[in-house]
Amino acid sequence: MDRSDTPAAKAGTVAVGELAVKRMGFGAMRLCGGYALGAPSDRPAAHRVLRRALELGVDFIDTADSYGPGIDEELIAEALHPYPAGLVIATKGGYLRGSRGGWTPDARPERLRQALEGSLSRLRVERIDLYQLHTPDARVPFAESVGALANAQREGKIRHIGLSNVSVRQLEEARAIAPVVSVQNEYNLEDRGSEDVLRACERLGIAFIPWRPLGAGASLRPARTARVAARLQATPAQVALAWLLARSPAMLPIPGTSSGAHLEENVKAAALRLSRADLDLLE
Ligand SMILES: NC(=O)c1ccc[n+]([C@@H]2O[C@H](COP(=O)([O-])OP(=O)(O)OC[C@H]3O[C@@H](n4cnc5c(N)ncnc54)[C@H](OP(=O)(O)O)[C@@H]3O)[C@@H](O)[C@H]2O)c1
Image 1: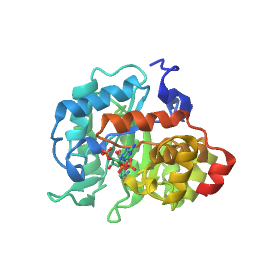
Image 2 (image 1 turned 30 degrees about the horizontal axis):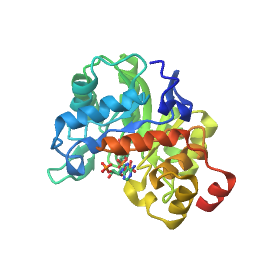
Image 3 (image 1 turned 90 degrees about the horizontal axis):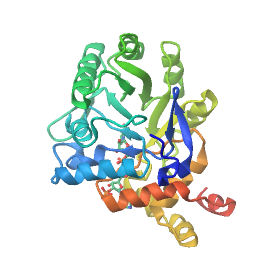
Image 4 (image 1 turned 180 degrees about the vertical axis):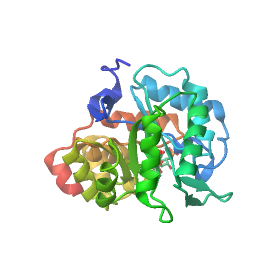
């Protein structure tokens, strides 16, 4: 997808393996029903949000088999298949969902294999560009979970391996088993607990994908965010995303929304530049 003149392109690109994607992705989880369970109340509206994201130049979409479960990947395929060249769909496996929305880690190799096969079928592809281990599972040796993804990569079912919700030590352990091109951890203005993982990704030249980049709304509320937003005639969401982009060249935010208006607003943050004074205020 040559989309160099689109709003998302203003964020520049980041490498996901040999693939270059715009540093303004889209997190698709919010397209499902509440708690990322079940179908959206307005399925065509969810399709429109996905198609509009691509028109705005977004070429990286994050999902997981556990969103829906399954429904999020189906929505993506319904809206976007056959996929345009250059679109990277990143999915994940490693969580089971309870009927009330709970998240139970299950990263046993046999379960990951089953999850991967489900994702391949729902996304209607023969290979997943970026397959992320959604979470380590305390009941399973981490090396076994990563080893399952390495096997699937050797079989050609996964192009690149990513990790999610890991420590620097786990990142290093995984890298001894297979190449890792990205880490997806929670990170936003209000929660910087994964600063060390971000810096490790930077050092390694791999992508850092902050989940909950808007703090699920919490990053929009502090007065300092509102002050910077007012100064720049921007919105708090745009400031929160521009702050992430300024924080590191490895950063690949995936803001989530089911709203077309919020999507437009969020992608426009790619063009917003924060001054030293703005960054100091947000520090
Ligand atoms: N790896 C993991 O364990 C993990 C965990 C959680 C999420 N994720 C991924 O990360 C993505 C993003 O995380 P997230 O969706 O939880 O949190 P988020 O992107 O920080 O925030 C999304 C929330 O903010 C609202 N919002 C979005 N844009 C807004 C705007 N411009 N102004 C005001 N409110 C706005 C959305 O509501 P509206 O729909 O009303 O816009 C939604 O409630 C997910 O889609 C998923 O792909 C991964």
